[in-house]
Length: 399
Image (cartoon, rainbow, N blue to C red; front, side, top):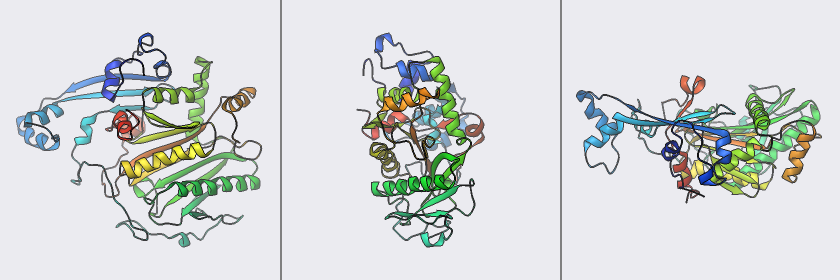
């Protein structure tokens, strides 16, 4: 990487204190894609700390290695916030490392969450449901393989909505085989459903892992939907952002630049034609994106890298995985092809090229009583403690 390597979100903030572009002349092409997509600002705040409050702050803001109580108090008194803004999708994240030290109302430890559940066990407070309890099937039957089976959801998200129910109870017992089996069942269901409903061409897969991530049952199960008329809202938002981007930068593709911006900052890992990266503007602390122009083994390997990182590296118990599929083409998922051929096929119809995308985000621990969704996140901006550069460093990407 040309120039000084960025190693933290605060260093990135220092480079772009007021939303200005990084000087491309001194850094070759490294910052080109970043400058086209992101704006960054950094501001500091200062509080007046009452003497009567210092004892609590000393406990709350203490870190290993502190040599005196004054360091804890200063950590609370002076806080620096870095804002990263994707000016096309309008994703915005405020990073403040001090928030990771804030007290929680249930006294839980401020450490990475990690719990293993043996097969066949349940979690207190969670309803147990074995695969056999899912008795409803789609009208055209049930699909089955080594790791899962399909079942119709009793309470529908949409008219064409089914599930892949995992055969092993604990969703934490994860491996690459399970991902492949889940996606095989999912894509087979998409194609069968499309044959029965030819107007339904917009597919999406969503896995809410455990209750805190939105699941009604602890037992692992993912949702797959196929829509008519138009794609689901977040896909449409990304497509509109990509269209506006192509109008301002006709020679560039938003998704290619998004990958380049993260890869140039060493926040990414590539698997052939697929790329997984720790997102610069995440919804929650540990968020990964996977982008690929083909639905192939590279894409699946990159998704598996992110799932395994969440579960095994960062101890995630509850998380979301959503996969955006491009619309059906000639009655099936878009076939793998050279990237330029795919892009040209979109341009011939006057549309903007769209890749396959996976979105993964940690949602916290099963015993946490503090919600990770607040009014600011819904209507304002995401508030995040974890530094994406630190995440990449822990994964061995930032070396």
